[in-house]
Image (cartoon, rainbow, N blue to C red; front, side, top):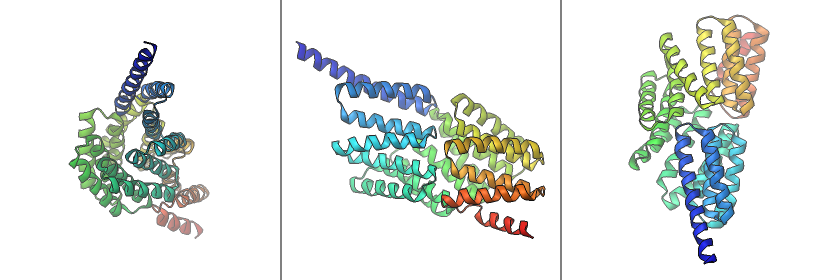
Length: 348
């Protein structure tokens, strides 16, 4: 009877851990990250208590993904690495591919693009070997992000569209929404506004359908940037207002930094230089704290460009040089040509 009771308790704890993990996934999708973190810790505690290594590795991976979504890249990598050591012991190749994909993405956003790319390629090789289409689609999406960071937007779109075709084939609607957002951003970088707006709005439709308010907020930022290029300021203000509301509700600091940066660019275009400077400073402070080098570097470029426009020579030189250093350190080529040109003009 004691053995039967112990077996029943073990089964109940395993089921409870599984329920907590599934609940956390739904909460994370809806942007309820603190609640998701609490439930994942409960699930992890249960797995450790009964020595369920397979589910322990699954939950560690979920926690890595959650911390990645929160912009806590070092913490994400720590959980992924802990997961990887267990996954290698239980010989789960699909999970290993998913972990490598997660580490690769975290490395990209930490600014180590070459290491990130290596992890992503390893993930893709495993996916091809075992025909894991769902992980393959997400790894390809991350390869697109890699090309995006390097300013190779045509390559990025190729990777995104291949990823999108797979995601549609397996009907993974969450991934489809995310990829469409990325395609829209890449088209925006290429100056193809019509295509950019189409994909971003399609992504918003899906995000609304599935309740993914985080992705909706990201799309709003990108749509605001697109309408800013067209000088449609009413639209820009609409997207800033709703994006800020979303990220404030989620307590997402990086999302809020994106809204501050967009506000700074709006004030810059309206020639409200002091207001613009205030919001560039607020955005950069957050990007720097979270180690978001690409957005920090691009913000310094945009701020330096404003200083250049209003002929604040020393400030322009300082900010453009800072941008060049940050973007160069991660291999991001976007703006580097313009930075060099402006720095050369400042010497004249």
